[in-house]
Amino acid sequence: MSVGQGLHESEKVSLICRLLHQSPPGEFRQIVQDLCYLLQDDELVNQEAARAGARHNKNNFTPVLVNGITVLLTHYNDLGGNRFFYPQDNFSFEFDHLSGVTSNTHLHRVMLDEGELWRGALHKGLNAYVNCHFPVGNCCVFKKRLGKRQMLVACIEAHQYQPSKHWNSLWKSDWTFALTPVMTRVTGIFVLRLHYFRDANLHVTVKKSVSESLHVIDRNQFVTDFVKFVKAEDSKIHAAILSNLQALSEQTWRKNLRRRLPITRTFMNWNELLNYQHLKTNVSRKEEPPLLLNCTT
Image (tube, rainbow, N blue to C red; front, side, top):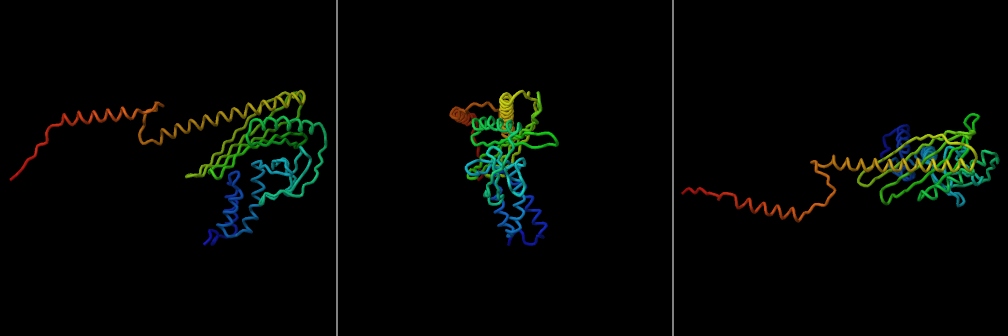
């Protein structure tokens, strides 16, 4: 008997959407397969998964390989109709969010204006930083319009998917600013997501926003200052996460013990302890009075 038997279609849709929305990075397709098995309704699951998959991939900056080039799927390069573009090499492509297959790659012309020159320079500088500091990392810089203002958005994604070791993790950040003379305000948003599923089902999400004003004099100067700012903020949040995990680990260790024990961070000399216990036992036996038995005849 399947889980879906006895459920109305609206209830199935609600269940599918809720579970797909909670999908940890790197596990979306596995959850789709599990839902097909549980509900025994592949058509309905795939229909809802196609919509949820697009949101999932864009929210998590999912990297895909197109003609040997890694492209991030984001809201900033979405052309609609499951089509995305890559401004660095001027092409667009279709992406099937269910199968993960790319197709129909075409030339995507971009006007070579001042904003595009800044975008290209920022991509080059940020890519050098990501390649140097992330074991598996990807980035891209996009242009977008906010009213009459031209904005630039830099996206960074790094992940480690280790399902055989029962954990998956994603680190992403995006940085938004306008190209204004003299000074601009850079706003960054970090997201760390971790899922551990061995003997437990642990989901961890860390979010943080930062903001800083940077001088805008020329492209080379701004790219250098921007990369330095990103590197400094990355280091700060990394150190803060490690510090919090260490504090949480020590707190849990203390609270989960049945009785409070002193933490000396030294090794216990078990031989000395056993010798002392043996000596104490012998002395106690010598001091005990003789046992008297009362016999009745």
